[in-house]
Image 1 (cartoon, rainbow, N blue to C red):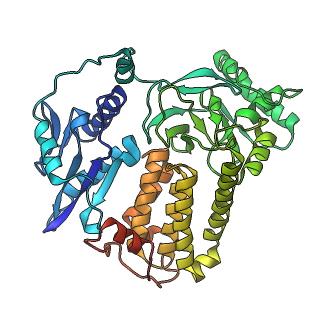
Image 2 (image 1 turned 90 degrees about the vertical axis):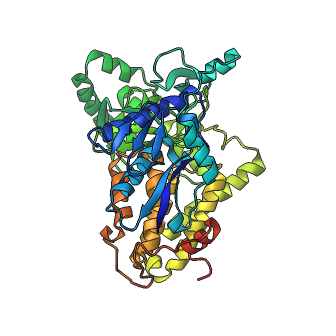
Length: 465
C-alpha cells in the first residue's frame, strides 16, 4: 500500500529551441541540487533517482511525460522529498504546465500508465537530430545566437515609444528579466522636492547609468524633468510600498489591461522580476499592468492621471458591447474581492466567503482569457485564510498549495512571499489566525481519497454542505 504521486508535463514539451533551452536549465538546477547525493546519478541519457526505477529525467525533453512514484507508508521521507522538490523546481521553470497530481487526494495523473511506460522506454535511445524543412521552421526551432538570453529586445512600439518585444516564444511561468533598480525614491508630494532628491541620486550613478535614466520616456515634460521621468517609469518595490524603483530595461515595459507578464519585487535579492503569465509568441510585445483594476473608464482615468497616456490596449479597444461586458466583469471582480476581504464576514459567514472565492475564480478565468496570473495567488490565499480561520487544515493545505503554484509561476520559487506560502502549505497552523474558530475542524492529512477531479472540487469548495 502507498500513495502514487508526482507531476506530468501538460502539454508535453516539443523539440523547439525554447523548450529545449528551458529543459536544459531545469536539469542543470536538478544536477546542482543533488550533486553530492549518491542516490541521484547522471547516466548517459537521463538523470536517475535510485529510490524508484521510474524516477527518471531524460535529456531529451520531448520524451518526458511523468516524474512520479508510489510512496510507501514506510517511506522515511526520502522518496517524497525527491518528488516534492523536483515538482517544485519544474513548477518554477514551466509554471502550470508542470501538472502536479496525487491519487490519494483524488487528483489523477494526466497520462495513462501505458503512455508513461512507453515514454520511459524511449529514454534509452537518443533520437537523430531533425533538420527543419523550411526557413520558418528553422527560426522557430533554432536560434542563430548560442544562448537565448535575453529573451527580448527593445524596439519602437507604435504609439508607445519603446517597449520590450519577445525574440522567441516564451512559455507561461518563464522568468523574462530580473533587474536591480538604478535607484529608488520615496513617493513625495512636492515635485520640486522630488526633483532635488533625484538629482542627488543621479550624481551617485556612473555616467552610463545616468544616460540610461535620461533616455527613459517622460510623459510629463516641464520644469521638473527628473521627476517626470520617475513618475512615468517608476515601479513600486512591493505591492503596498511607497518606495519606487527606476530600471534601465524593465521601466520600458508598457502597460496592458490584459497583460502577458507580471512584475514583482524580490526583497531578498533587491531585484524586480518579470515572469510570463501567459504564452508569449516571438514578436509579441511584453506587457504588465499599471492599473489597479475596475471598469475601463476608471482604469483609463487613473492611467492618464498617473502615467500621462490614454490606454488603447486590446481590452479597452473592444467593441462597445464587448467592452460593456468586460466592464461588468471587472466591477464584479472588485465587489467580490471587497466582500471576501471583509474580516467580520469571514468569521460569521465563511461558507458565503468561500462561495464568493469560487465565483471570483470563474470571472477571472473569463475576463483574463484563461490566464489570471497573479490574481490566482491572492484568490487561493484568501480561500486558505477562510479555511484556516475555522480550523480546516485539510482545505487550507489544498488552497495553500494552489496559491504556492500560482505564485511560483508568477513570481518565482525563491521570492520571499512564495517561500512563506510554501511554509503555510507544509504546516497551515503556522498562520496566526488558526483556531479563531474550530467550526470546520480537520487535520491537514484528512483529504478525501479516491475522488474524481469534479468530486474533489465540490469537496474543496464545500458545495452541497
